Image (cartoon, rainbow, N blue to C red; front, side):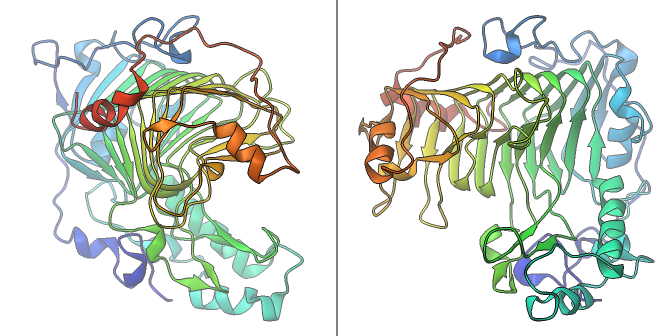
Length: 446
């Protein structure tokens, strides 16, 4: 089997087990209790702070008792603090306040030993070399997705990894980093069919898929597609994601190898909000060095998303990201007071206006490098229009819709989202955003 792993795509033979060789067995999670000074651990989302504050609001695990207030340092401790059984934790609604201390690598077993891609593939029959040989377009063609023995093996290996790195988070939970260096490495927080969840002050790094699927029908040239977001909201309601940093770390998309002349894409989203999720506020986060950052909405054919997906993004920094900041279908999404620091790499667009979307994009600051026009900030994915006002481009007033329509006369966008946001607790003057967001956004800034 050709070894491959997430630390650096250019060095795929290096397994994560090398990074954590000699890890010791985990200690028991440490109860905290109310006596420990935790100035923001029990904080709830303030009133009027975006869609997450609507209706019942978002309080997370602020009501957790001492027995359910813990400090965790390993994957095993994290799973225990969230209920004890990762397969069932998603339905555990007991109020829980979980503090993350230091780095937790989610590619580790319950004894703390590191796991790599070969471990997940063991016994499935999957190897990357065999997969590449079987589904080479010269052999398989370009008219159908892979099927057969090796695709079945790939799916089995992917499921084995998912059981390890997807961490289920149930209702009434706050997950918060201690200090400046709390980090979840290599995994996916899955908030599925849960209500009232807070994630704050964490760095979420490199949720890499060991087993991407080749799809020759995805565009005219085909694409590799992966599973796992750093945080996935799936039929989740009342969620607040705040002061966190999302990054691919050392395993950059730009460093992935090419197979079938397409990048071997091992990352999906950073924070994706789908399947009728609702009432979400994402504030003061940094999304950086990544391609597909934020998807809101499942698919154009979804029958459950319409009427949901009410999301606010404010005071976030998108730095050197390629697309989906955010890409929206159906939802009423308020995008205000954010900073877009577009890099010089593979940039496609920032705000994707999809089917049925109702985006309000106001008071944002956009930095574009030389050669990237303002017309690229928006992209029409089948939407009809949006509201855009008081946005600055490189320090000057920028008419984002006008720039897009001039460059794309065949697919113009209208100038109204059809609604007016009211849940804005703090509105920063647009000109001050590079300094305010630069100084305050991301993990370690609370």
